Amino acid sequence: MKTLFGPFTQILTMSNMAFKGSLSDEQLRIIKNGGIIVEGDRIVEVGNFSDLKHMCKSVHEIEFECIILPGLIDCHTHICFAGSRANEYSKKIQGINYQQILSEGGGIYQTMEQTELNSDEELKKLTLSRLKRHFFEGVLTCEVKSGYGMDLIQERRLLKVINQIEKECPTDIIPTCLAAHVPPKNKNNLSREYLKLIVKELFPALKKENLAKRVDVFIEKNAFNINEAEEFLNSARQNGFDITAHTNQFSSGGLSIAVKSGALSVDHLEVISDEEIKLLSNSDTTGVVLPGCSLGLGLPFAPARKILDSGCKLAIATDWNPGSAPMGDLLMQASILASNQKLNNAEIFSGLTYRSANALGLNDRGIIEPNRIADFIGFKLPDYREILYNQGKIKPSFICKRGEVYDK
Ligand code: NIG
Ligand code: FE
Image 1: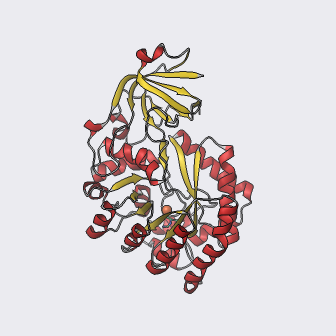
Image 2: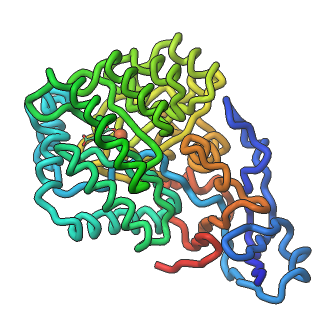
Image 3: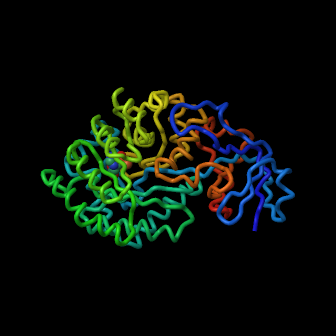
């Protein structure tokens, strides 16, 4: 059965906009007094509410002024974890740095230890509560990485948990294997062997049990170096996985091998040279910037303005994790990025919708037009520009996920 939703004060459809490079607000296709017809989990028609009314017997009437955006897509998170790193955060705000804590066996290793102490049920509960918070803040599709497993057995367990929770919440979850997060504790000299073991033992299990189609690696000091990461990413590609990389967070160099290996995205980019930006702009790889990580670590933002002006693909994600980005509020972080980097509404909203879908290799969402998945969110505001002006503090009041309406 077809249902008409509306009337909406403004619908930002995000249709007919470029995937690469800078944008202007004039390019936004805004439908005033709009309506959206949905059948099953798909959009059938978008247009003027009164014009569409005769096409549907069923109408879901909206009684407040409402600005509609496509459902947000968070293309980079680490929300499957247990425990807190508040102890380390207190040290970080006194000046001890992230890399030092990691090199001393804390940081990611601390979360690995805490995660291992929790049962599957406890981990599911923790991850689901984060997904729920995200959902009501507008994130209707969420990538979730493993990465807090001490060994391959734990990594496989985390990916199973991530897969199982998809049935228990409305969010579409995109699982990513980040077994190559850091080398086994106190065994940095075994990093290459560890990567080989992932390829030999974990990849076949991921395929057999259908646990992940995407593989990630952290390229950095105290994690994996450029040569071993290149070998690893190429093996992942040869095994049929989509690939992505954590790179250029504290040092540059990893981006070029990730792009050459055909990565769908390169994420972080706080430290990036002009040559690397050029390489990215000549590729199909999306640069994913993570303002929540800069906020969490008190470090400069990735140069998003320059990346867009150089013609690159750019998406924005939370990086929600217990160490570098504990806040997890996508809209607020994107709003802060907008004011810091001078990104306009069109650039921010594209980076949170169809461009982040593209970073995940998804082309069925992120735009409000016929045949796309019926994912859209509504804000009780008179004008779309109020969203960033309020710095992401005003959350959606209306959520439609795959054609179903959800209340808090
Ligand atoms: O993207 N840099 C590596 N991984 C995460 C942080 C993980 C953690 O500190 O627990 C990130 O920032
Ligand atoms: Fe990350």
